[in-house]
Image (cartoon, rainbow, N blue to C red; front, side, top):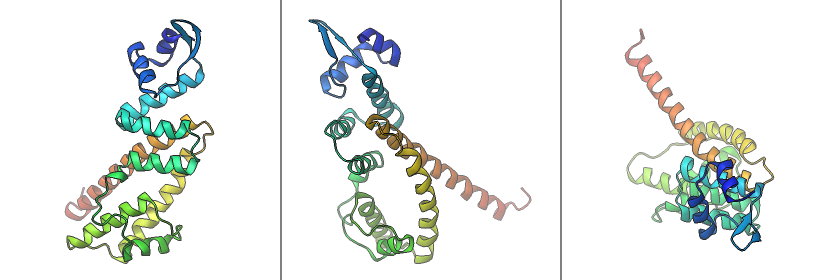
Length: 207
């Protein structure tokens, strides 16, 4: 298919496609003429991924480019998933005051759930947050951490099966990034509804 066909197929304007080609987010098509190129299903899949990352997840072009360079460079799936998590959840924005430092509460969570005792951006982010809570005088106790971690462990087990199944790297990033973003928002909305429901039961028992 030519650029016009690719645009009609994906709903992405020719100008945007040309921009993605210039920025290296979209690989060049197969040249068939001095001014024409032919595009494939891979280009369709890549454009759908770029659009989802930009307009659903809300990532800037620079961060999308970083993820796609990893994918095109043949990075292992675990590294790609870690980069997607770091980017989508903003784990690379964690304050360095507590990030990277182990905390007793963070170590306790790992023991409670028998999670791998290895460094990760997610663990750094948790330790940073636990450190912040401690400094503000609202530490997370063992009972609370046990209950919370058990709930999210169940959620994560379902999510990881659904979002990491695709073999195609474009689809892998798509399902992981969109899944992390939308599922995370779903958990927050459900938690908000649960809080509201418990408050209503307590203060308006006849509701």
